[in-house]
Length: 134
Ligand SMILES: [Zn+2]
Ligand SMILES: [Zn+2]
Image (cartoon, rainbow, N blue to C red; front, side):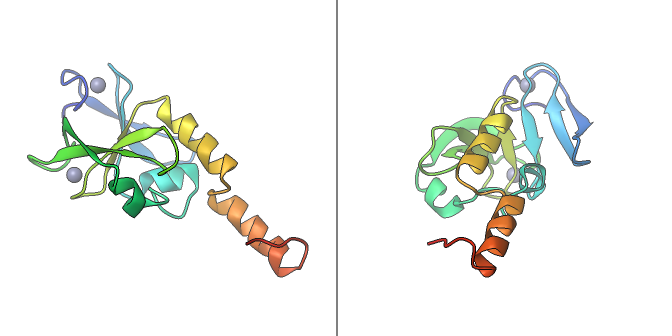
């Protein structure tokens, strides 16, 4: 398995602190998330919170999908109103990120209250009548 970004190095498996096995490139730092892995790592209900809207901003790339043969990734914004862009496979729903994009995505999720645990806390407070959410 070759890195789509730098083409030279082999991907290595890496266990995150959340015990999720992701593949990363030792040469350029790109990280490959299979479907469902990014959401688990950043604790959101879905890998892409607004996939349909994000796909409407898709740009083609020359990057090959890590797992699909002959499929190119598309460049889409992680959130339709944010600048951070990720490379996405329409076939297997895998995501290719730069290492620095992971903290950027966590920042978006916490600022926009997209993370699952935070949402659950808010829901609980709402149920008990402490806060109102539109
Ligand atoms: Zn690489
Ligand atoms: Zn794929």
